[in-house]
Length: 198
Image (tube, rainbow, N blue to C red; front, side):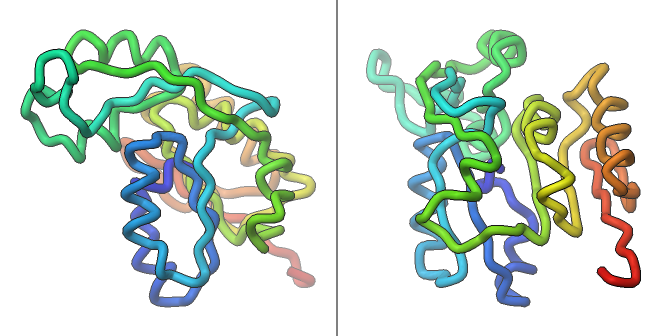
């Protein structure tokens, strides 16, 4: 989720993994599809993940010029970094970022995790790993996944913007049988302990 910023892509290519790349930002989705469209084992979904199916407001940093001023919406700074790192569903985070960069609120289709997995446009029914990088929205995405039904081997999510929900996310994954394999200032990597039966 937020596939435009996925550091696992080299591993996906090396081992031939199948992937479902989810990106709600329309500016980034175009680039994502252009970059990986020739990979036969990848599928693409331009939408967000939420608690219910429908639409939500997404706050996007555009990689285009401001139509009113003709200037970069990121003030001439590193466009790619701003576009991939600052767009978010979290209104509170977006409002803070609007002080330094122009953000565009837009309606985006949202699916629950089961709805996404059930889509006929791909063949992935049980993901081997789930990577979430949604700029403060990670817990809300993680909490929509039924861990009794979907049992990925790895869970990777960004915890540094979760605030009080950081411990909630840790408790949620621990209860589902996941152990923290790595945690730095930004990300948590948790793996599922397998029984003898797998």
